[in-house]
Image 1 (cartoon, rainbow, N blue to C red):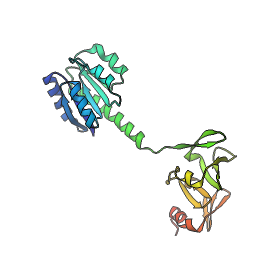
Image 2: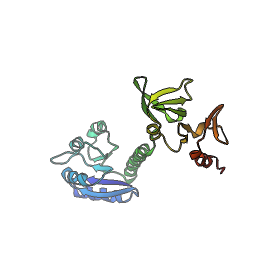
Image 3: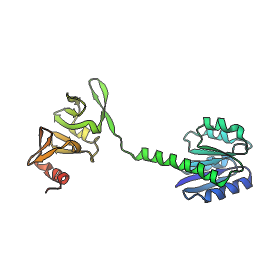
Image 4: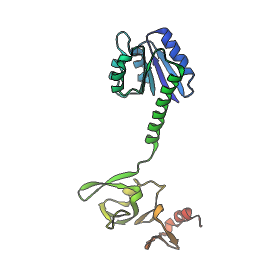
Length: 232
């Protein structure tokens, strides 16, 4: 659902805009305002995703209003004048509608806003695919999918990567790196070893194998391995 505001200084135009909004199932009208100042008060108290905005209004114009907002919602401009379209797009508005607006054209603009909102939401909820660590006097980017296994050596770690024949050595603890690894991809198999579930090729009694590399499984971690294999 997109929480939206409609702004137009013409009562009939605002009424028509409210009616159009009511016909779009994923829109929820939070407020209908006759000027941008009213809308500013709404923005202080509500999370607004989309604003339908007239351009030519006394006092503060629609384009001036957009420039005053720092954390910008999406905007769809609705105006009787085509001449402002270029400036509107320079402000990254979703669409520019010229009055009178046919319903199908209005819905098309709303669909663009909905698709952009969905894309943004997916990006925000998707987990990161990498992290950075201090190593070799630099911040090194490590992609989770590249990590095969990690070996702890007191205050140091050896991070074995698929993309490199030589492990990356970093000064950090097992606990600190474990907190950064997604549980869905990695498993602690021993006090000194974390392995990628994707690279485990076989399990044998007290060991897991990554190809020919044998990694011991501690007594306290056997149930976690059993949960992966389904063999208790």
